Structures are given as structure tokens and as C-alpha cells.
Length: 321
Picture 1: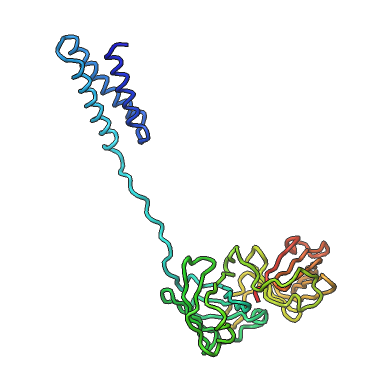
Picture 2 (picture 1 turned 30 degrees about the vertical axis):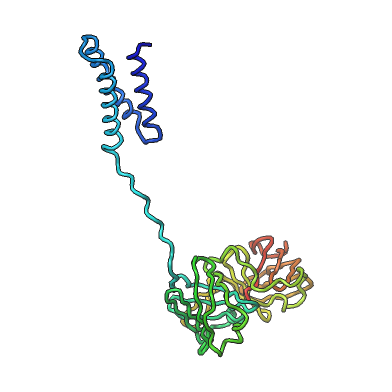
């Protein structure tokens, strides 16, 4: 290979090395190489006539290469703009709380229903869901990182909230007014959390009470009385004194104080580890067998004798209160 041919090959190779890792189209690269070859061809003619030394030809080729490559990379290429930063919530708003949340503090686990109009209802037990809402709603307010909850007149809890503000929110106690100090164990806690129940439960949710024993077959209505969340869904089941209501929008209350329920009816414990639910207006029952509980959880197996389409073969309920 002649010196000139070798130089041409090296410059072409250098072009590819310079462009490596940079977004350059094949057409752009070929255009630069063509410009280089044109200059090199004219250089050869001058060299043959004795007018141009080899070093000048190489220098000129390198200059054209640099200019052409700069033009390819800088001219006509859209400027690279940094991606906009994704905003992260820096403060809690009242709208973030609208829904149903469990206040996880020691063994007392009140369930709070935050409404869009700033009112607050407390689910003290299943009776609050079974009957027409009769209690006077409380209120809540959010100011920066300060959350003030007033479940009932004279009972006020002031807490500081900490991000992130998702399905679980960490809270730190600031003060509790004396009328509700005993109820919320004023001297027993500093840090607690709010866990979302509705509209979309926190997937990490656990029973609201400590599991105290192994699962045992249910034998009495007291084993199933309570407010329950059907695991993996937004369905709430409230059971008390042989009655039950169930639904995914129990926090929707009309002007008469009546809740929006999908199903209501009666429930019975008919034998050890066996319960039946009789929906209103239905001709058959939902029968569950091998029903076990440790108070915090219910494990149920749907019997083949149940109504068609009664639900999943196995269900797990978590106690809310």
C-alpha cells in the first residue's frame, strides 16, 4: 500500500472513531467521507504535477474532515434538552385524604372517613355502617404539614405529617385535647400512621389488631362481628347482631344519611366453622365452611352448595375494627 493510500485509509478510520458514540446517520458519514475523498483526489493531481507536498494534502484533508464533521454534528441537529423533572408532592392536601383511612395507633384502630367538604365521620364499629348515619360528623383540616382531626366536639388531635404521601402516611403526635386523651392513649404513643382503606387499599395493609393466637374454627357470632376488608379488594363487610352490609362505596352517604351498599342481609353461624350469608331478595345463601379466625383475620372457604357466582373459592378478611 502506498503512503497516500495508507493515509486515506487512516483518515477514513479516524472519521469513524470520532463519530463513534455520537448520533450520526450513515448518509452524514458518507457525505463527510466523499468531501474528504474529493479533496484528496485534487491533492493527488497537484502532487503529480509537483505543486503539493504530501503533508499539505494530509493537513488539508484533516481540516476538511474536521469542518465537515462539525457541520454534521452541530448544524441541523435539534438541541438536546434536559428532560423535565417529575414533580413530587411536597405537601399534603385535603384532597389527598378524601376516602377512608385507618388510624393505626397501638391497639385502638379508629377508621376515619374524610370527605371532600372537610367533614369527618368515624367508623367506631360495624353498627355505624349497618344503620343510617346518625352521628354528628366531625371535621379535619390540613395546613402545610399540620393535620388537625376533630372526630367529635371537643376532641381534637393535632399531628405532623411526613412524606411520602401515598397509601400510608406517617404522623407524629403534637397534641391531643383532654376529652379524647384516654381514648387515643395520649401518653402511650408519639409516632403512628394513616393507612388507606378506600378507594384503593394500601397493598401492604395488615390486620388492625395484633394476632394473638392460631386460627381456630368460629363457633359464635362474636367471632365474626366486626368491620372487615376483603383482602385484595376494596370490598368492606360489616357484621353485627346477625345482620351484614357489604360494598365498595360504603363511604358514599346521601342526604338522608343512608350509605351506598351493594348487598345487605342476615348472617348466621350454623355450626363449628360454618357460616351463611342470606342476601336480601336472594333465594339462596352464600355458605362458607372451614371458617377459622384469630380475631384479626377470617379465613373462609366457599361451599359448593352456595348460590352460583357467590364469590371466590377462598376468601381472607382483615378486621378493621
